Length: 229
Image (cartoon, rainbow, N blue to C red; front, side):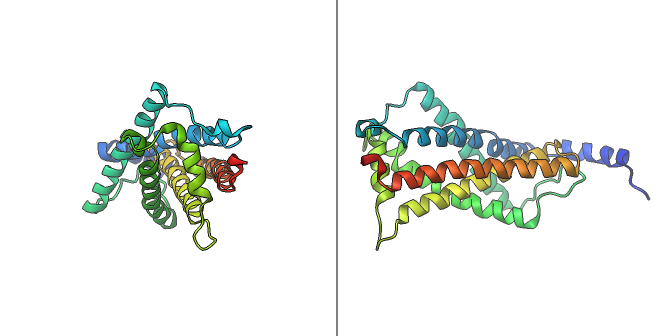
């Protein structure tokens, strides 16, 4: 039996509708909030890493907008995304292929899963050292720049371990976020043909590369101690 474009479209549409709420929320919480926050956060950190005076290393107190951004774009989506992803892994449930095109390649699937573990570990590490300590009253938010400089510029046996861990965590987070954007578009049926899929893959890769260059440059600059010169 010959499968025409119309036949494929008619079979794809019911499959897309059969996607569960769990799958849809997993896609949306991974594709929308985190990339937006990463772009905002890395841009802000890049700007703060180039002070004209040591006094400018003192961070301004986070306002209401900053706190709401952190909660809405990071913690709520992250907890939901991590919880849904963990549930799917524990139950062994596979995501529904939404279109006639195949899902991610096995390599990208493995990369997405591995990077998700590293990214979650990085977020927990970073959060425990900065916002969590401020919330617990153990540190002042205005001293974050000094503490970050001290941490990233420190070495163990001459090796900047903490800075290297931040680079790895940033790479893992951006990798997982970019794959998540592509997979969400695929899951929503936006990438209905191979050409659109290739454009999405390239766009997501460029997005991750640009933000990694911005973030890596910021980390290296802070680790060099230039903020305190």
